[in-house]
Length: 154
Image (tube, rainbow, N blue to C red; front, side, top):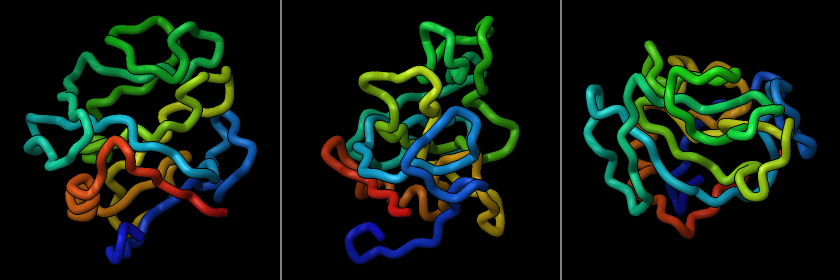
């Protein structure tokens, strides 16, 4: 729910958790600030948002290796530690909002890349993120600013 806007969403394949761990497939419970947005300019226009919105390209990744010094941070590819690509073949990361989950201070192994992003058709479970339909992400981005809190309940 965003104000009076109610949208269906997908959560992690393992449900929700109060004790997030890297790779558990669960969406963390809590209130998380929207930090920034990322978007693919080759596929979509810059989303209307009050957040900083950064372009992503084939050189953008996100480190998900708990032992790496850049764990749970954006990295430039190629990158030697385990990571995920921000420019995906599917449309899931065409617009992404970085939720402040385990972002300050970053605790090793307590979850990385917890995003609000586009969902696959039919809203199947995610790896731990919150996903909404591609039309809904633009509607939400327009309502989100640096003081926005996203609450995930379990």
